Image (tube, rainbow, N blue to C red; front, side, top):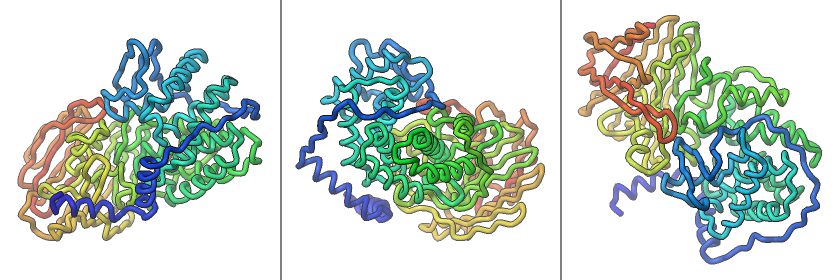
Amino acid sequence: MDRSKLVLLFNTLKYLRFKQAFYRLYYLIKNKFFNQKYNKSISNDFSRITWKEFFLYQNSFLGNNIFLFLNIRHVFDDKIDWNYSNYGKLWTFNINYFDFLNQNNITIEEGIILIKDYIDSDKLLIEGKESYTISLRGINWVKFLTKHDVKDLSINQALYNHYQRLLYNQELHFLGNHYLENGFSLLFGAYYFQNEKLYKAAKKILKQELEEETLKDGAHFELSPMYHQTMLHRVLDCYNLVKLNDWKNHELEVYLEKKAIQMLSWLDKITFKNGNIPMVNDSAYGIAPTTTQLFGYAKSLDLSWDKAELSDSGYRKITNNNYELFLDVGHIGASYQPAHVHSDTFNFELYFKEKPIIVDTGTSTYEKNALRQLQRSTESHNTVKIGNLNQSKVWSGFRVAERAKIVDLKEKDNIIEATHDGYKDLKILHTRKFTTKEKEIIIEDILSKDTNNTAKAYLHFYPGISISEEGDSIRLKEYNILIHFSEIPTNINVSEYDYALGFNKTVKAEVVEIDFDRILKTKISL
């Protein structure tokens, strides 16, 4: 390994917690040299719990062994291959989640056939035995079996075996949303089997991780609005479970209610009026429950909330009668778990009269390829890139080495100004100042010194928006919005980029690149 790769690796690993490093080594040794059994026999006489469904997944099982995940449809001609990997690991993960058990139009008979086919394939499972897939699948099986009152010992035995595997293989080497998902699922398993060991583990994880992973303003600390929606969905599910069932005397009910309200408040604040969330960091359409669905679920549980005051998430949102401006002036999320981070400091999204105008390019793949690297890079966001450098050193799909840090933040009336040090290799600080008025937004970019590298500011426009160049300005024809660049931009170039409509689905749209030397002023007149 060459020196530059070693430095990159060191600058990535140094942010890990000791616990993560320890458990990576522990699981490596345990799984290589110790063959632990997870097949303790159970009876079928445990008490039944109650489950009331308020949310159903979109249809991904289409009948006749046809599945649709991540915008890719596949037909299994003969037997279902639960390890099918031709479309990447995330597709394989999805078929192992079993969300389709709780979709709109699946029958009890179809669900049981699928579960039993899965159990028959147990010895062949690969991704299906990973703790993350066990966690999501466990919740889905518990919901399905409970609401349809299925009492099948072979299914319960398989489910219990999977929960034993999860109990002794919690994702302490990852932490973050993976470990939290373990806790959510263990709670469902604990209630379903009335199992003290599962409950003790679940309670420990939920109390510890929800406290750490929910920031003061209510955001999930990985700072992906999509993952926030997913984590909120799980909190609502757990609150629903605890509220409905007397086992443990509703012990976690008040705590889960508090966390749900915090997270609802943040989501209410950052969601655009048309229901969209900002597509920042790893966010994509069609994966998590929508804000509208989550609010409906919460209201069905008699929860109420107010909008949060945005603070430590680093996100800000300015809303008036004409526009909504979402912007990022914070550190990257979860320093020891930045798998879903993009190099996007000072990125922003602009909606005009509830229509997306300037947007994040979004996420369409989790495969470790050039497209994944591009979508995480600085040039795919509405911010400034110097030369060929990223503000934060994103690499290898889910890793980040050195990170841009906010070294100064000033907020006053209608002005937000921040400075980051992501270009410290060049000994350059980047300051961006947002000034917002009723019908005007001014963005000022200032580099702390001249650079021999070209500085580029990027503006990515929503698909279908056509741009005309007018000297040092551009005009958005459909909306008659004028964007003027001053302080002598050296070049304005309009080209195309791929906007992510979801996983494995993109469409062409226009991006404007503005070259400048040290100072650039962008005035958006609406």
